[in-house]
Image 1: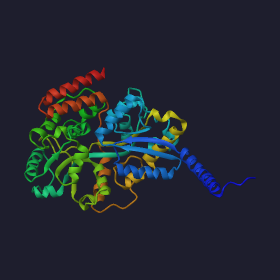
Image 2: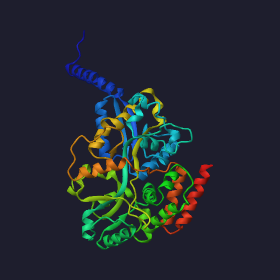
Image 3: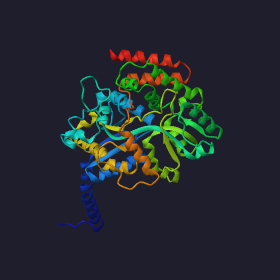
Image 4: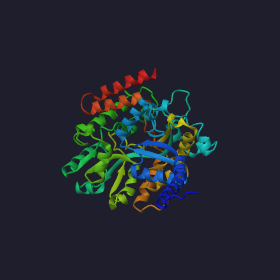
Length: 436
């Protein structure tokens, strides 16, 4: 046999060796099943850690996660739904947002028993399961999303700002709220930051008020009943309007964003008060500022009594973020199976454990809890949220058309374009039409 020149032989050997080594690597990479995931929450760093934990537990799965701020995320989601390009898993709030994408989502009722057993519903509080189905068509008992985490809404305040403004304690009445806002403004702070351009936070502030002026009406309205013109619902709209006319909120509030702008300003110490919730505890894992890392620089309270005939708002809350598997995941049996595995890890497995250890929010799945001991300043706040969640009233509108009407009219009321009565009458008309 004729020998090859030594340099050529070495080159062929190297090429053959490289090919032999690369083929198993390529085959291993090709064996990974890719699951795409979009959401606005958890924050990017937390999501990356969750994904890393899931991929470590399941080396045959690759999770490609995209996290965007609230408004850009839902804009992108709407466009993807219209073009048929939704990812495999999407993050969703309950009610109107889930219902908007229900036609694009798999019913998880048949999936859940395989993941958690035939009695799977026992792993979630009944109130969370009810909220997961909020807005479903009559007779539809399907689950188009399942909760990863729960939340309680409230007002947070900056203790240093209050001290500088010589405010001794959080306001308990609307009159005190107005007075405290003036003191904070005079001391150089944004008194009460409202991201009016983030529709969910407009609805949430209104619902916190309505929970004290007409809780029964609010709960009925969430289920789609046309009760928006009841006195207590109009009174809540009037209190909402007063936040703007009495300059409790900042100038330009209607075009402002709660995230990232408001949250960043609050973390930077420039805001006295802001409507957030239990998820603000995630700042303990995201900041090196001792006031945030231990929450020693912050406190919370429920919305003050808006009249002499009402009381401080009761807790409202429920599902923070849930996950839905889209029909895109049915592109192949492998993707469908992998998406279900990822769903389980997000809700009750390694993904959720990472989120809880960063105090992303409160666990929705029974038995899940942070794996480390909380800071002495932090533990009482966390424990109070866990207790409040047990009695919290729902905080979501089920019908997306009614939700849009509510937000549009709240913004018109805040801008002085409509009276509270006229704004609620407009929402009432939409709700009546939807009821038929």
